[in-house]
Image 1 (tube, rainbow, N blue to C red):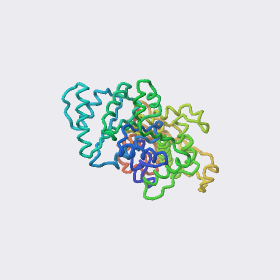
Image 2 (image 1 turned 90 degrees about the vertical axis):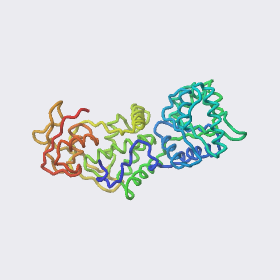
Image 3 (image 1 turned 90 degrees about the horizontal axis):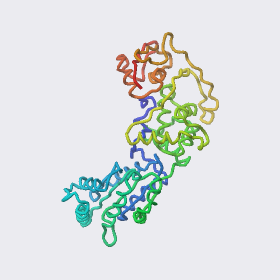
Image 4 (image 1 turned 120 degrees about the horizontal axis):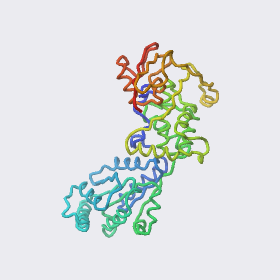
Length: 400
């Protein structure tokens, strides 16, 4: 929606894991090195932990993308909430094996023979369990049996747990004591530091553009990293929504004013972390967005847009501090501010208006689907970035 406006090739802050945007802080490098070491040295159990949104799955996918070897077979378990029997069945399917019986004992012995053959052929099998904190204790306890498949010095199957930090509490349960003792390699991914957070934002913008793209002011970047508490996925949400909102306002430079508007819309306060009463809710939202492959769009209150000719000083250090108070334009004569239940709203395009800004004023928020429906109702709009002053746009009723 805003790519041409900001001279970007692709969206820089999608919350779905994308190895092409991989930013390697020192903790991410350590986690990746741990996976590589544990798999290559056939250590058995490998554990990667971290809070929601710190980049665990991204690191996993980056490893799998680079490790695409003919000597490596990866079995990726997306849904960890699975019984031990069904997990064995899933492993059999991934290895193109037909179980001789549905009895666990028979299946385990059959799997053992297959793993021995793979080992003799110089192949390595990796079982990756994402969101391992959701795996039932009984399944975890039985997984220990697979770690008994070994030669005198090496494991026949490598099991990588990728989990949120609370998984370590699960491992402290008495029945999982032996499993915990078998974890040979462990790494924890921590939130980004202030410096890494700023570098992360610049890295994603540079990756998404043709050259070094400077969109956020230095103060805006600091604000985003501070409020996001160094969580990459939350940084993505705040940055993406800031880009959408700034696009609606027709601003190519994003300062703290727009960033703080997004922060308010998510119910987050600043600057003391302890006051972020809704921060866990935002983490939950982005976690759901990550799993579902969607994106979180700012839930904005309806408000008139600022005047297009409002100015700000361009010096980075002063751009926010000296920016004048925003003045607002009244709605066009005879226009309604918000779509009613059944009637369409008609707006006359004013100087400085953009389609995204008008969509936000009418519906209270802007996203690609609303832009598409408005364009569909107005066939004369061929390019969402070009609307003519004085033109009339019809905004159909849309269910939120």
